[in-house]
Image (cartoon, rainbow, N blue to C red; front, side, top):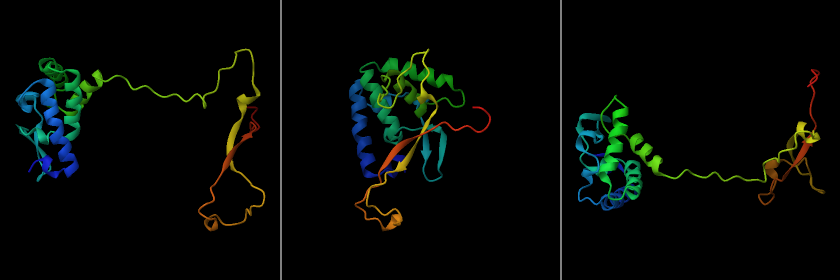
Length: 185
């Protein structure tokens, strides 16, 4: 029994859908041609829960879902250029001498090389505007704290667990002046 059989049905369906996409993108008829046998990942023995180091995994469904998804991403970028991908993979494998076969991390590194960097969304509403170097602002040395808003007519002594579920806790920020601890700063 391989790792494919241990997957849930949804994951098995994903594996079954990804493999033809990889083959189509690289223009091959057999998925095993993507990774040469000598560097193919090793077989995982599910019963003993250990790797069988002397046997390559010849059922691509057992390569792992993330491994296959990353291969699909690479195959889209390298459409028809299987030999270039295999050269890059061999370079990654040569870099680690502890074992001479492809690892998920090797595939991830190659994929990350081709993926455009993710753009960070910057929210300018929370960033402070730079001040001119000559000015000193009184806002430099204060902190804010969140305090519960006191609404008129509310009973503050009422226990929180007794509040109805419709009531929402509301907070506002209040300025705290700089504290000095007798050390002059």
